Length: 271
Length: 363
Image 1 (cartoon, rainbow over the protein chains, first blue to last red):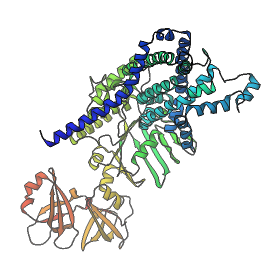
Image 2: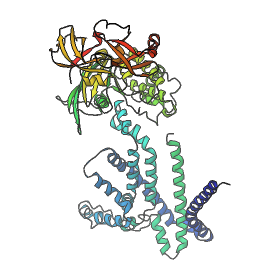
Image 3: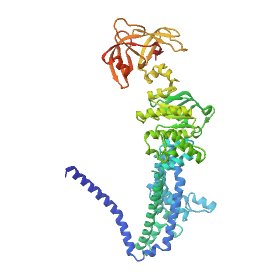
Image 4: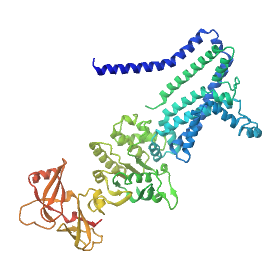
C-alpha cells in the first residue's frame, strides 16, 4: 500500500469519526428522552392530559399563524431589501436581524414596554379602545413573530438576491406587470430559499419560550404553549417525568411536520 | 415597423448621446464593449430611462421627455433577447414561449406550436430550457421574444456564446425569419463579420456616441472619421496633403506619391493644402505582377512583401514600398493567392482603385 493512500485512509477515518461524534451528541439526549419516557408509567397519562392537548394545539396554531403573518409582511420587506436601495437600508437590515442575535427575553421585555398595559403604545390604546395585548393569545403570536419572522425575512432576502434581475426585466418586456413578474418568475425561482425560511420561522415559533413567558405569561389554554408547559411540568411535583412526556410529544409532532414539509416541497420545486 | 431613437443619459462618469432609426430592416449597433450598445437596447425596451430623448416605435412615442411620456416595458411590445437569454428555468420551453402571449389557452397553444416549428424546435415543448443545447436555447429565447407579437426585435449579442458553425446557421436563420415576418431588428454585436453579414444599416458606437450611422457599404467603404475606419477594420489609413480637388476626384500626396481618390458625391471637397486621412480596405487593393521597367498607370506602386499571415480562407500580406508611396496591408483570398503564385514572388505592383480610396479630414 502506498504512502499516499494510507494517509488518505487516515484522513477519511478522522472525518467519519468526527461526523459520528457530532451525530451521537444529538442522538444520545434523544435516546435518553425516549428511554426515560418508556420506563416511566405516567408518560402516557401526561401526554394525553388536557394540559398537554391545550398546549400542543395552541403551539401549532399560533406558530402557523405567525408563519403566515411572516410570509404576508415579510415577503414584501425581503423583496424591497433585495431590489430597492434606500437611505438607512443597513440600519433597517440590522434592526430586522437584531432579534436573531438578542435573547428572546429581551424581545419580551421590549414588547411589554411597548404594548403592555403600561406600555408606550399599550396604555393609550387601552384608554382609547379597551384593547390590551398583554397575557392574551395575541401576545403569544406577537412574541413568536418578533423572534421568528426575522429568520424568514433573512432567508427570503437571500433567495431574492439569488434571482438575477434580468429575469424580471425580460418578464416585463414580455408584457408581465410587476406583480405578475414577481409571482410567476421571481417567487418560483426563489422558492427553495423561501421554503427554507418558512420552515425555519415555523420551527423557531414552535420553540419560542422567553419572549412568550414575559409578554404573554403562562395561562393554560390561552398563552401556555408547549415550551411553557414543559417548564411548568418540570417545576411541578411531576418533575422530570412530566417534562419528558411533553418533550416527547413536541418532538414527535415537530419531526412529523418537518418531514411532511420536505416531502411536499420535493413535489413542488422545479428540477 | 419603424423605430426612431434619440437619447442622452449620464450614468456616473459615462456620457451617452445617440440617435438612429430603423425601418423594416436590420440595424446593427456595432462597437467595443462598453460603448453604449446594450444601454441603447435597454432604453428602447424601457428598462432604462434616458435623461432626455424621444423614442418612437411604429409612430407611437414610447419615450418623449419633453412631453413626459415614458411607457413601462410591458406596454412597448418590443421583443428583447438579452445576452444571457434569461430563459425561465422553472418553466417548460412551451411555457417560456407562451409567457408573453395574450388570448385564450387554445390560441396560445397553437401559436406556441407554430413558433416552435418555425424555429426548428418541434418536440422540445415539454422540456426544461436547460436540457436543450445552447443553440436550441437561443432559438427558444428568440421564439419567446416573437411570441409577444413584437413590433421590434432587440438582440443583444445573441450568438456570442456559440461556436462558429452554429453562429453561421443561426445568422442565416435570422435573415430568413426577418424576411418571413417582416421584422425590424436592432442587433448589437462587436463582431465585424457578423455586423457586415446582417446589417442593412450600421451605427458605429464609441464611448457612448454614434460616430457614424448609415447604409452598411457607406460605413465600411467611406468611414466618416479615422476612429470609424479603425473600428470597422480598415487596415490602411495614411496621412496625406490635398494637391487638388474637384467634384469627382481628389488628388492627395501620400508618402511622396500622388493618389487619385474618389470624392463622395454631395460632400464638399477639401481645399488644396489641407491635411487629410486616406483609407483603403485591405481587400480592395489589387495585386499585379511586376514585369520590370516603368510603373504603369496612376495609383500604382511597387512594393515588397515583408510579412504575411495565412488565415485559411484568406491571406494577409504586409507590403513595404520600394519607391515612394505608403506601406499597405493587402488581403487576398486563398485561391488567387495560389493562382498568382504569391508564395514564390515577393515584389509586386499594388494598384489602388480611385473608387476604393476614401478621403476624410485628418483627425
